[in-house]
Each structure stands twice: as structure tokens, then as C-alpha cells.
Amino acid sequence: MSEEIRVTVAADADTVVARQKGRELALRLGFTRTDATFIATAISEIGRNIWTHAGEGEIVLCGLSEDGREGIIVIARDKGPGIADVDAVMRDQLSSDKGLGMGLWGARKLMDEVTIVSERGKGTTVTMKKWRGFAFDEVRQLLGEGGAEQRAPRLGLRIDVSNVAEALEQLEDTPRR
Ligand SMILES: Nc1ncnc2c1ncn2[C@@H]1O[C@H](COP(=O)(O)OP(=O)(O)OP(=O)(O)O)[C@@H](O)[C@H]1O
Ligand SMILES: [Mg+2]
Image (cartoon, rainbow, N blue to C red; front, side, top):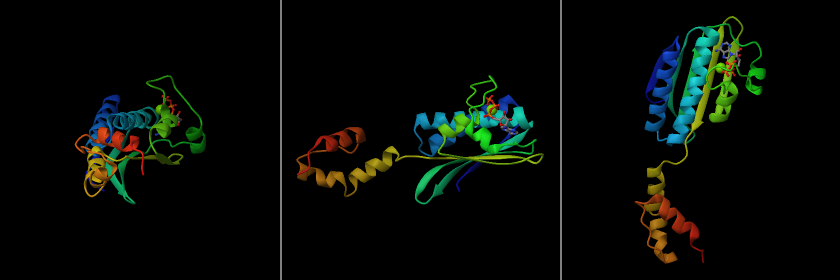
């Protein structure tokens, strides 16, 4: 794992810090701005859950590299009362009318994986992961180094890999012989 960021969460302001640090890390890891916003929103929800349902806890953020995939992992831990029925809170769209009200249900939609380990009276750990797609530079590399740029002349194309979107469109629109 790469750099690890820890935020102690005991108040609303800490959730804001966790959210901002999550967004910054996601962007550094090459997530799109949209994905970085989704990640930040999911962090907000579990951060708010820590201080509203457990009082205090911490959020750990880290880059993730697994089976050739790159992503982000968010771990929220507390020693609060725990969740009685984890399956129910994952399945049902509960809302307290506070904040955005997306809750754990929303976090599950925004992230790729969410797991909850909780024990009554001992606390809760929520682990969320999200994988990122190809970053701009990676696509450019694929198109360039021995890829589409080399094959393009055979298709009668002159592609410019510095403009990845345009290069992809040109290749898509060209019939293969
Ligand atoms: N860290 C936690 N510790 C103890 N209970 C929790 C924790 N996180 C969630 N819960 C329990 O799971 C339920 C569902 O959480 P969820 O975030 O989905 O909804 P909510 O917090 O009730 O509402 P909202 O998030 O919309 O304000 C909560 O009502 C609470 O009972
Ligand atoms: Mg909540």
C-alpha cells in the first residue's frame, strides 16, 4: 500500500477534513473528478456515521494495488455500540433526514466494494474500495508505444496520441479491412 492518511473523527468538522483528504488522494491516484467526488461523498457518509452513531473513531485512506488494478481503500473504525443487523443496513435505504441522507446504502452505490464488520458493544469497521479505470496517460501510452500509432498508417490514418479522445474516436470510426 502507498501513503496512508489518518483522520480522527469526533465531530462534523473532522468529516469535512476526511472528505477533502479523500478527494485529494483520489485525484492524486488518477481518479476522474467525478469518481473523486463519489469517493468524497461516501467518506462523508461513513464519517458522519462515526460521530452520530459511535461518538468517535478514525478514517484511514490509502492507495491500493491489487491483481494489476489500482484503486483506493477507505477504512472507518470506531469502538461504538456496533450494528445489530449488518445485512439490513446494507440492504435497506435508511435515512435520518440529516445531511445528504445517502447513508451506507448510498456508499455502496458510490464505491465498488463495501464490507462491514461489526460486533455489538465492540464497534464497527467499514471498509470501502473503489477501482479506477485507465488514466489519461495510460491510454496515451497504449495508443503510442507500438500500439495504434504504429497501426494507424495501415488504416490510412494519421493519429495524434497527444489528443487521446480524438485518437480514440478516429480509430473507432475507421472500418477494419
Ligand atoms: N459506525 C456505526 N456505529 C453504530 N451504528 C451504525 C454505524 N454506522 C451506521 N450505523 C447504524 O446503521 C444504520 C444505517 O446507517 P446509514 O448511514 O445507512 O443511515 P443513517 O445514518 O441512519 O441515516 P443518514 O446516513 O441518512 O443520516 C444507522 O441508523 C445506525 O443504526
Ligand atoms: Mg448515516
